[in-house]
Image 1 (cartoon, rainbow, N blue to C red):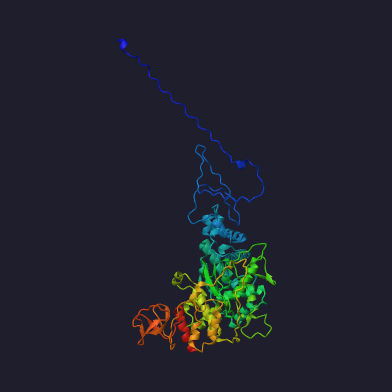
Image 2: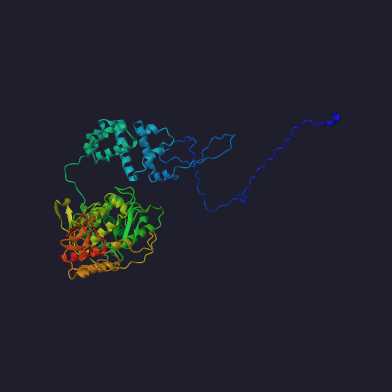
Length: 637
């Protein structure tokens, strides 16, 4: 029976196959790396390695002034058992690399160093110093405190604080003595010796100390707000001295000098800058913060923007009419001034300058090189010098004393003129707010245009002066008799637009301003002033001749009828000139139906009628409404 059995061999484990060999990676090298290096070509750009937020910063020696550099690679400890990998943590959205460095670069390095020295002298009095002085990025954090201030403001405050600290050391005091009665003693000495070697007064010292107390969070300096300290701000009882407006005679003579060929380039730059501040309603400091590359030249108007002003940190737009009082052609004093600026800025300089100011510093018969902003003292000297009209050989008519004028007189001039026209209903309060760049609610913000009203006001000023109106110069807010102004005789300068190859400005394709079509008498510069002057000469002859020159648009002619009296109606804050009509659906007043001259459909029952313009409201800018107003005004004269 054993033969029936089949012998089965013992089970043996299956042999596992040997693991496959891992191919050794071959690092291929670019053929260009095998070639010898040669000199020449463009330099390689700098490489900045981003620092990981998980990396502990390496301690570095603290330096005064410049920010710590972060372009050196940081050595990260790596575990040999784990594959090496690099992790990049992106910056928060909206933050760009080097944004802090770019902002801090606007502040001089020596000013940053003085700021850090000042913080360390204050020491533990400051909550900022207590919480952050052990941080490796302490200088960077302290520099962030200065981001929103202009370099001129920082220089004034830091310099004053350093002077105060040196005085404290002379008296064997320190910053802790600011919080006691010794502060009042120090302020009294500064108040009595404002013009001494200290170089500052009590009010300046208080402002600088309060600025440092707020910025560095110094709780022990709360005595800076005590009544005794506030008493140093109380003005004296004498009457405040204010800047008087420039006379019309001076403004016309400056414009005339700019249009003459004998005017030098230096005179053109300075006089043009003064006239730009005057017509733009700008302060001197505002004009020294205008980027020249942002100017927009449209032959009939010049637009620009101040990137920082006394009341605005986000930009302030402005615009000026180009033709002025004397130009009756397309070439104006603004064009002549811009060509002079183009000449001095296109000249090659060894050290490039930032073109963010209207008035450069003068040196002899020219300008300093490189071009730098003109200081206030030099600008005041030139203003009073030009008020004497040194180029005139004849006797200058007596007017205000040149020493009575200041640089703020430029801003107050057009506001004073427009106030006199507002009494006649020719200028609205809204236009005056726009000319002076005074804030007026959110309605203007959403209108998206802060210059149209300004150009309209300037256009009215020019028309009134060319029509024979003369302004007076008030004194002491009208409490005294106005200055006796010399007689003004307007000349006519008519010159076509000159072809000029602009090198610094990008004005080679300049055209007329399209938005000025809605403003009366702001049309084609070659024909508008001539038509306007003809209407002024014949304003008393017929109403048709005066109305024909009021608008240069291509709109359909509107029949205005007989000009018996002015009838004005409004629903909102815009006043329309009204005409008698037979349409019973139109608004009714004094047993007659009226329609708007511009064609606007006014509600029948909600209109407010009047027989004169209300200066608190605006006037319709449509050409037909303006024609009607000019027609009735001509008959009234």
